[in-house]
Image (cartoon, rainbow over all chains, first blue to last red; front, side, top):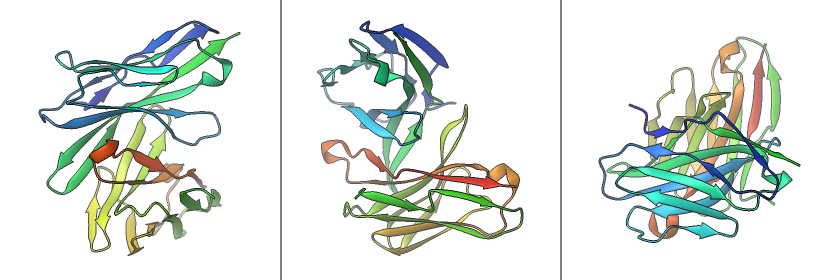
Length: 116
Length: 114
């Protein structure tokens, strides 16, 4: 089974509008971490936001927020007031702690295009 | 300077050649990883290392080997490159899970095997 599922290969959003990128995860661990990364066309991976499994509040970082619904195992990224520079690939990831150390799993990504 | 540095950034090579991708980090992290990115497949783990004496295979280690020369250095080798190893390769580091423990990525090494 896929550990991380991103069902939206591509998304479009009008500039200044909000957009939600979906992510569901699969784990039997109680302690885990959820992350979102942005990859612009230049290729680098940029860390956006983190949510711990025990965090009761949704994480926020500027215009980014993570809508964490633990019972549904979803960790959607919400970008408010989209900007042209938000056009990029977005990857959801999960960290599980194993006896050998941390393991990270990535989704296949969502390509976001912001339309002027 | 970047905290995680990969060299070379771009490389074109021929089938059968040996190629090494190098990674060095200044973050002081014990944990280092090599990932491969292919369009539509996300990032897949090749190898990871949690300290200098610890090397572990990831989900797609066949055809690759690694060396952890020091805490700060982790290199990936393709002993005999083949065209389907054409991809974007990322080195990453992570700290301990406290305070997030997110992955810090290098800028990527784009490898083309002809």
